[in-house]
Each structure stands twice: as structure tokens, then as C-alpha cells.
Image (cartoon, rainbow, N blue to C red; front, side, top):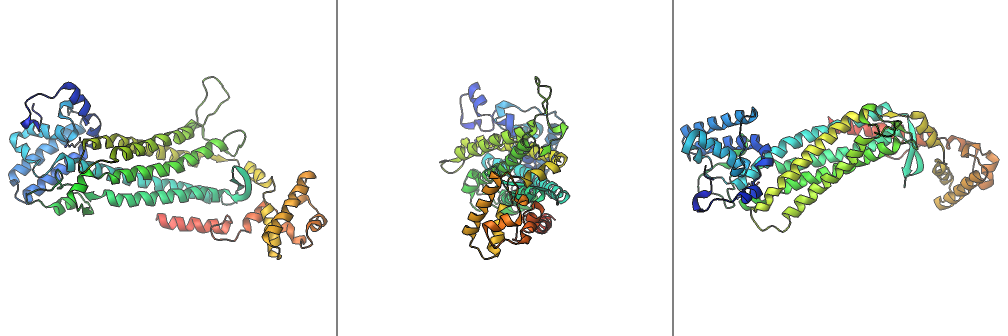
Length: 457
Ligand code: ARG
């Protein structure tokens, strides 16, 4: 069969060119959206009397048959027809003859492929938003279950101050909350109809783009036909949103890996989410978390690919843009799998509450509370810091903990110390005494849980 564009050509396309230019091997994934878009287009053409109602009905019936054939796996995708658009059009012509050739009126593959990609991403992105919500809920749920568990908070991976495990978990919930909002925002710019831009300049035919937008449930119609066929910002935004939430996933993954090590022993990962070693029988490896960290790399790579493909392209459509699909598809597949795995793994993580608490209790983690005690008694913070530093050194030299020091020892560092100092050096007291908005006290953590839950409703 002849190619739809073969009119001006005298020579046959060479085999290598067919191999080199084809995209159907991967863009066949867009078949559903391609047919959906074509049906809406045919309806519009008939409503505007550009084609007859009779022809439109035949076209739509043919398209629906093709839909079923593809769904049932009976459709043969052919490389010689390049891409999904021409594969479906060729099949339609085979079914209903020349009338099928009326479908491509006032349309080009340039606006058609932009439409398909937007329809595809719109559906996938909605699913991804739900998955992100699900992770947020999972983390909130874990925080609520661990409201009284104290753990060491770190800076520079050195124990810093005691915090609530719930506070730590909620830090991740907030990251994913921003991620969700970012993706929701990106959806606004995906959900704009490019069809009707035609090759680049629009058409002389009396089309009705608003009607197509209504049929396909788009929020708006694109305003510049040249921009519409050469714009992939919506895909770039999706890829960058994905790259950003993979940052967060890789950080969660890293902590799961670290915390499940013998050295930390903060958590136990569920058996179902770890694997053994083929040589060392005692091993239980955090492979799933490691792959989450690893797969983050390919998601960044996909963003880089599309940024580089689009860089410096002259207006309007260029064939380079066919290379947009694989990075987008790969990112969709990777992030959906990763999000699903994380949603299932997180609630099964077992926290070693005693170990968390004991670790928080060591290493003078409440030294800052002592300095703040002195500040409340009127000492400038820098001086208070200095005095407390000396107390810590004294403890190290004498192998004592802050709570082991007698009041006379405290007083030898500053006369301002009173008996009440002992109310401030325990880790529970330290956490409870935090007052600032957004801090780690149970009161404040409950508040952030409440406000995040409200956003999730
Ligand atoms: N397969 C092409 C793509 O994915 C469709 C658009 C082709 N347009 C063209 N003028 N050759 O970008």
C-alpha cells in the first residue's frame, strides 16, 4: 500500500529510512488517544459541514472497529506506515475506502501528535497525582501512629537534637505534598487543545476548535498554531516534576537503606521487600530501596534528553520532536512502579522504638536546650553557647551524661543554674518544650498533621 504522503515522490522509501524514521514501535502506546481524537475531529468536521454526516458516521464506525481490533490484539502495526497516526489512517482506508481520506481534513500529524501526547499525559498524570496523595496519606498515617516516638534528628549525619519520629515522617509528607501540587499545576498546562493548529498555520476551512475541546474535555484551546505544534513544555514540566519527586523518593530510599543497616538498626524492612544474597546466607538486602534510588537516575536522564532535544529547534514542528516519546513513556512507567512500590513498602517498615530513643538520648543531644535555658535567664546566646560547650567537655572528660551532673557542678559553670535545669535535659522534656511554629513538639506536629490532612481532603 502507498504511503499517505507518497504523491510527490517517484522513488520508493529505502528500507533503512523506514527503520530509521519509524516510531510506531513505541508510539503505538498512543492508539487509544489517537482514535479518541480522530472521532472528535470527525464529529466536528461533520457539525461544520466540512464533511457529510454520512461520511463522518462511516469514519467513526471504522475507527471504533479499529479500536476493538487493537484492544483484542488483532491489529497489525506496520513499520512502513511510520507511526501510530498513519497506521490507523491506513487501516481506516482499507476498511472504508476513499471516504477514510476525509478524516485528515484540516489536520496534520503535527497537531495530531501533540494532541495524542496531551491526552495520554493527562490520564497518566491524574493517576500519578492519586499515587502521590496516597504516599502522603501513608506518611501521615505512620506519623499518627508514632506520635510519641523520639529519635535523634541529624545534621551532617551527626546526631543533633532529639525529634519526634512523626516529625521526621511528616517532613517527607510535606515534600510529597509540594510534589502533588506541582504535578496538579502542570496538569493545567497539559490540558489545552492543540488540534486545529494543523501543520503550523491553521486552515482555510471553517473548523470549530472549541467544539473539539468540549468533546475531549479540554479546559482551553491553544492560542497560537505555531506554538501549539512545536511546544513540548507540558512534557518537560511533567518530566521535571517527576525528577523533583524522585529526589524525594531517593532520599526516603537512602534513609531506609541506612536505617536498616546493622550500624543504625533503626528499622526492619519487610521480608517481602528485601532480597537475599546468592553467596552470603545471612544477608537481607534493601534492593527495592536501592533501585528506587537508582531509578531516580534514569528519570533525571529522561528530563535531560528532552531538554536537549528541544534546545535550539527553529519553529515550528521538527522531526527531532518524535524523540520526545520514549523519555516520557519511560518516566511514566518508572515513576508509577516506584510510587506503587513505596506505597506498599512504607507501612510495613518496623521501627525499633527502643533503639531510636536510646540513640536520641546519647551524645549530649539536649545541649542546645541548656544554652536556651541560660538565654531565658538573660545570658546572651553566644555566651550561653560557650558555657554549655564547656559543660559538654567536662562531661566527656569525666565520662558523665548531662543528667549525671550535680547541681553544684552546673553552678560551677554559671550561678544562674537552678534545680529546674533537670526539667530541660531529658529528651522527652526537650521535645515537649519546643514552642515555635513548625517545631518538633507533639503539639506542633499534631498541628501540621491536621493542616496537611485538610489539604488532602
Ligand atoms: N511521528 C511523528 C512524531 O512523533 C508525528 C508527526 C510527524 N510529522 C511530520 N511532519 N513528519 O513527531
